[in-house]
Image (cartoon, rainbow, N blue to C red; front, side, top):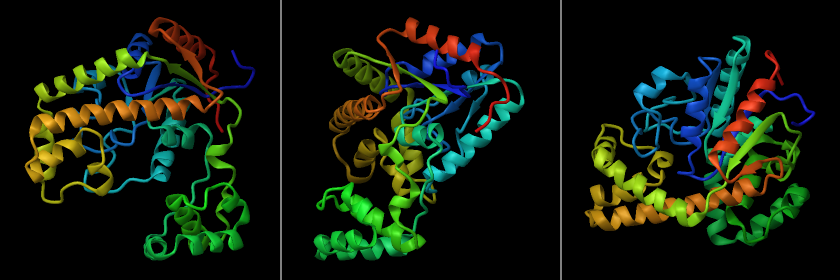
Length: 312
């Protein structure tokens, strides 16, 4: 057990690795003393249920969940909004003398909470102008960033258009250098939330991903996506990018072959799992376990050691 005082424990790992089932079983066995904070960029959307593996109504009656169904599918949702909501949930859980169990695979959301990242704002008008300029001369933008914020420029490749635009967007829009917001994702702070990682063999994980997705199709995922796509205000740009939904939308909106879309969704889910694994592997604080039983034992150990009312 780490010597740091901790205020929660998180179960992390790639999609379909068994995180949610592990967390739910532990929270259920606690008799209400453990509540779950979802760390997922897509379960924040209402009515996106099946393809996000959102806990069922029965499961939500058994265990208290937080950070689910926060906005409509046509709305955008930011990391900052998630951070604020998760912090409020953590405070409420602590005030009640209970324990928080974070679970999910959206690494950026997790880091926002675990490391209390100072997240720069968004400046859409500035960003749009920069996108247009980048299409003409990305090198000029990089030179501008080097002049305005040399530290930020040194942390990225001159060809990384997305990062250059974001750094300049913040620098110009906020009036302060992008690098002044801290070391961000490059820095790993002290352990105040213990992270327990589930490590799966990819051959097994790939099979689980396919089985799960085809199960979702039998449960009515296609109908769910159709209803979302044909709703009066549709889906936001972010919601449309959800793996599984994006591929089925091609069938619904463009007439692509359904089985081809299903296969593509399975393929993209497998790629997502590998990206998630790579993201979490970079964090040296995560404690990895190859079997669920050992991971569960570690989670229970940490939960049992957390003092109530611990705050940032």
